[in-house]
Length: 444
Image (cartoon, rainbow, N blue to C red; front, side, top):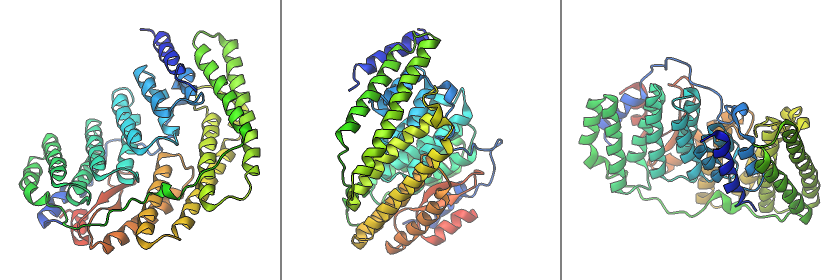
């Protein structure tokens, strides 16, 4: 089937929907964490967002998110149509996807790109591994599963050290994750053992199998259940009617471009892009005015406003970088640095706003919320959604906060640590007592 027929079919279909453990365990982990070999080629250092190749994005599919379609649906439809760059760009710029579908799509795209663009596959797998360690809304079972899948992808791509780190993280989760049932621990650790055997580490695989009966008991520490989520601090806003009207105009222009792009000639394509660009400029003007008319907001409602602003500024940032595969607003392309700085400033204000809200909570809720906030901020930075270098400070604070929390729990559970064994900074989950962690870092 031709690209035009396949993509056009997907486009029309989507348009229809528009509107505690032993020293032996520590020594075994040391076999993973202590390796110091470097990959044959430098590991790609760019963020997932910066790795978008805009020339490969199909505009007719990409702009469907501007027509009101769900990011996940567009990313999956683009994969089905063979438009991997469009799927990648949609995922990389998405601010609305929940953690579970986001990490699932990163793993799928890592596999998709493995044969044709190994560097891109490595970036996608690293994004998934970042999510396994940092995404606030993932449970221990999901974190372990993502780590195991990322380990296989890294291994298949010949990235030995990231594969080692991902596999070691899966074992750490299986041994020390506080939310796991015994059967879940056994399943995770059995999969780690199988993966070790597939790698040729038969001695380590057999050693782990011999420890399953003891390891599945877990830490024996009971932690109080908490239903607190960072999102509980967020209020809501109602934007004026003129914003809804201008959004509708932008969606119509995007839908028109999507429907008519493939059969259109060069001149009509220019006109379609210009019409959508004009709608985007008009929306930016209306939004700016509307935001200024909202007046004084509560701290909770201010967080909701900042989330809305980030979503819109990310659209502008993508347009400015031609992330929809076509030039839509040339004026924004000339202002990409200013738009990036504005976006970074809004993220900073959002994180600080959550921090002020957290200060008023009880100690338990504060600890949970503080960790989640640092995880989320660092993840935004690692993925490239939060421009700038704030991730380094957020990472430092997160490692410190996770260490403090584990100390309060008697060194139970998982903490966030760093590793540069792969020639690039990774954030990984580790458990056990400090002496055991030191043993793994020193190679036993």
